[in-house]
Amino acid sequence: MKVQMQSVHFDADKTLLDFIQQRLNKLEHFYDRVTDGEVILRLNNKDGAANKTVEIKLMVPGSTLFSQEDATSFEAATDAAVEALKRQITKYKEKSLSH
Image 1 (cartoon, rainbow, N blue to C red):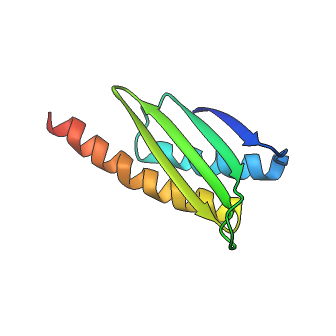
Image 2: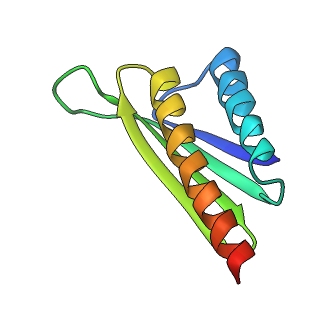
Image 3: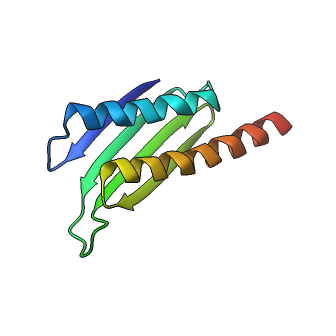
């Protein structure tokens, strides 16, 4: 899967980008027709510990799946966003198979 990654107002290191790519590659086990994706990493000015946001957008035939999560680290936010996308993919797959 081809994934474009952007980090807003900071430079993400290679290990973080590799971690995100590895997590997104696991989504192909659930649905292999994902065409491409976009990931946006953002630091928030919110008070509190959950000031890191990960937005993931996946393009599938006929639809776009989106998840946005806040957490204390980008890794935790990525895991939460991937779990949400996993549920969306299974729903989309069941819906498309029933038609």
